[in-house]
Image 1 (tube, rainbow, N blue to C red):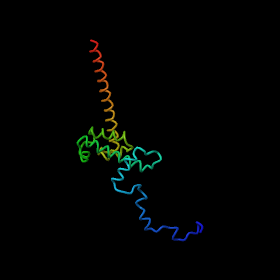
Image 2: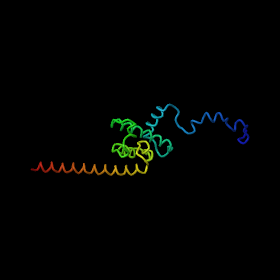
Image 3: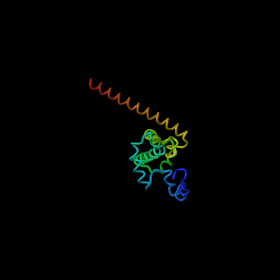
Image 4: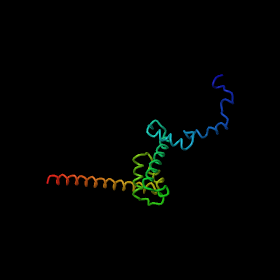
Length: 157
């Protein structure tokens, strides 16, 4: 039989079968959320340009959640504290800057997740806090340099 002359039942799949495969049309993972989380962690380091944008976004979101959990633990905060604390809280902004450095999440996604307000105001606060962090590091470095120079002078005397 040639391709152009397939019987009707072979040319079209039944709609019930389409519904059965619907979950696979948009997702790439079958299994529990825990399984998906584990797979995203494993794939995180091997994702490249040839992987789909959706897969890279999901991996970035999983990484961001791990970073957020880690930082919340170190701060002694709960997830609820993110919405209770000020939008300009230095710890929240440090966390947001870390997410910007270590993930591909947008400022919009970070602002929403950390309760930083609108993306526009979050962007301004992040820029300001990043500048303050750079100035603090420079002051610390200068102080260390001055201390080392002082030690050298004291040793000469």
